[in-house]
Length: 167
Image 1 (cartoon, rainbow, N blue to C red):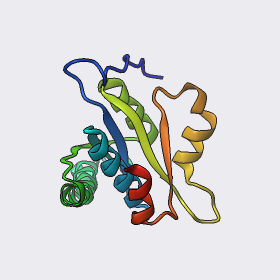
Image 2: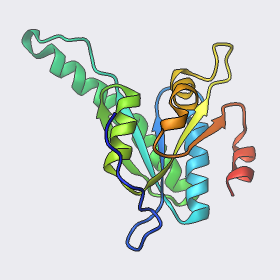
Image 3: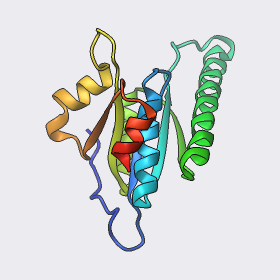
């Protein structure tokens, strides 16, 4: 695991950040809504991380590079749309980060790099398959050694319910 820096979000010159993963799941909007409302309430910042899955290894005639660029462009489009909604809904101007790789690895890498990230915000799926693989891993197996507190927003909550909880 990557070595984690000490959290500094409450020291002079620093500001608390909520990290939220942006993906294609329906519950992602719940996590974003909670993070922006909570950040607005606490005068904190939001970092929206979108991770493009690495494409299969296609090195033939640059196909791999083209596939990677397309995946990153699609990811950036989703991220930009949610960032615009965050600005409109809560006046929060999120920092947007796009990475390519495995989601859990990129989350940990970003937390390691940014000592102001104080919370990771995820949303739990509502389906019969459980809360989702990332929530299961982070809240389950890795919970005791995770470098920051994890906020898990139930995917079934409405925007009004999340707003009431987040402040």
